[in-house]
Length: 501
Image 1 (cartoon, rainbow, N blue to C red):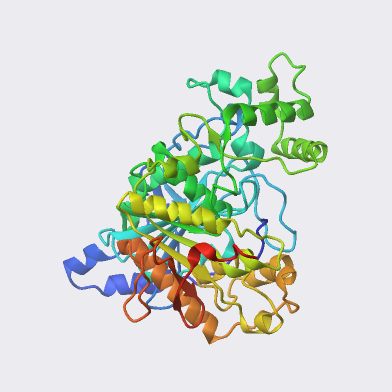
Image 2 (cartoon, rainbow, N blue to C red):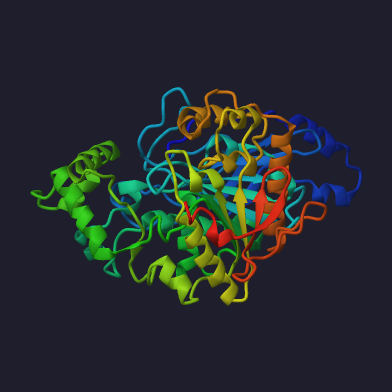
């Protein structure tokens, strides 16, 4: 999916915090104050403060977690970022990967192959707070999207006591191209998967640096929606991600029936077709010639290739023997995945329709994941999201694909403008007629419940929050799941949802 909306406007409380800091009279209070600049492994950075008074969250935008993968580094694994002198002001989101351009009336998202940036939002008062960490892998299949979508910059999920990290990565032909010439120059004889190596690099950055933001590197939850859910599934299966995370949340996406993973030779064959459309095969060094082209020329050639194939280019993970030793489904089936407790979430409307994005097969995929997690001694929790804002619900709208994202990140009042994007892109195809969804206090309650459960899961591996509802762990005998609406309900028959339609 494309992303669109206006960037979140934020209110700075820096002067206020300086005043509070200066009023501290004890040495202990001085030590516990979280001050900018802070030092990460590549240098000093400063950020911005957002959020209501007393619930401030520091946001650091556009932190480079790897070197720019440009020039000769195009189609190579990410390299460590260079250090800098002085203080780097991390107040502006970094570039997003080249991709189909989002509508012009949304936001000025700068596209560049220099896109390996992440953002950190922390409610910590000191570096010793040791808060759970949640790392968001964005959706949009494997070819569009970013870690700077408007709802991701809100302070509300972090205000539940978690450090939030959102990640940009290479996408589409920039991030997933495989080719025999690329495999030949690799020490392991492989190519492709650069997008996934970027995510590994981001998680390694978290391990090295998150403590200075008040985060606990030994308590990391990866989560994502749609293509982001498939990315999380792949990270669960990859031996390279072992020890880099401890829990996982998959929302409306899994790699099994969605993006299952392909043999290296299959992706190399697609790369050869793209090189032919680029017109570089007659060059003395076709690979070097391809690396001198602009990303725009590569995306244009991709469009021509899609017209020839009469379908979208199937950019996917590669079973390369390094990032993936087998397909994610097979790895989980044999119990060889990285140990992690799991939440799987789907929206009822994307299972039963109407809508442009329907995926009823996600339920069997989720059941396989949950059973695989159980076999390794971890716990899995299943849920179905089915809340729709009042006006859209009256108009017959269903809980369509990506609707839950606004609730997970706390955009219950449309403070980011993201709901206009949902209206223009997804809600109308799912039954809505009005641009205004009719948000009320009920939406706030549903959102606050979800944020509390997601944060509690990140904190403990168990999403149960005292005073909400008893959410049972999934097992195939009871087949129970949480139905997320107002009110919350526990139901049975998760494996049978939408399977008879």
